[in-house]
Amino acid sequence: MSTHTTRTPNGKVVIVTGAAQGIGAAIAERLARDGFDIVIADLKSADTKAAAVAKECEAAGARVAVIPVDVRSEEDVTALVAGAVEKLGRVDVMVANAGIGPPVDFLETTTKTMNDLWEINIRGVMYCYQAAARQMIKQGGGGRLIAASSVAGLSGFPQLGMYSASKFAVRGMNQCAAAELGKHGITCNTYNPGVVQTDMWTELDKFYSGKAGGPDGSALAAQAAANPLGRNTNPTEVANAVSFLAGPDAAYISGASLCISGGMQMH
Ligand code: NAD
View (cartoon, rainbow, N blue to C red):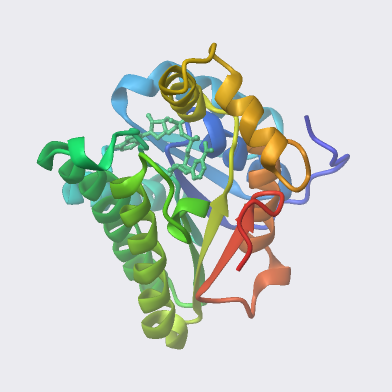
């Protein structure tokens, strides 16, 4: 629900991947209210949900394009950026949010799990950063590259070994991009959520609760109880942080990782 009463268009265009649901949808809706025009990018199979998010963004006053993408495909991501330029004129911010987080014991982790995580969580972010940066350089005037890492990108968690590795890699790649692209006025930052109640954590909760022999919901409750603030969070609070990273007040922040975890992870 918006706390804004008026929206001032800022003439800027943001692409949000994985925007059909969860954290990505909240980011798209928040940035629409902030004044951005929005490209909602998600898998073709998420079209119906993407259309609902588009409606929310349009209701906020944004110009919106829905462009299907599989971030594993460089061709798709190149077409996504070209489509954003064709439909909305430019690209100022890329939020590389799409990701997966399958829980699995370290000793049972397979090559397929590793490859899936690598292709979506790391290669996908690389393609998004590269394609958006090329467009930003062409346009001139800089831009913002923002990627989803995680508290698991700062510390290892049980049963999230390769996910954790992928989210560490996102931070490494982001720091590299920040070092190289700063000369073009492009900043690069990650947001690192803690426990956010989305479909991803519904699955994690089932897995962890079952492993501990407890009912569904018990793992989430344990996470909340252990958190310094005594609660988990929701996509809106993550979107608030991304709004800051995409906005004018973050102009001199680059190569940073911002935790939205209630103090679950400190660094
Ligand atoms: P989610 O599962 O609710 O949504 C993920 C979205 O990404 C979906 O809409 C899905 O269709 C899309 N997606 C998946 N694979 C894709 C692909 N190949 N190409 C394009 N889109 C694809 O997840 P969420 O909880 O909203 O998480 C969003 C991001 O935040 C992820 O990168 C996740 O790792 C990260 N994160 C989440 C949490 C959390 O607690 N939920 C915590 C830390 C980090």
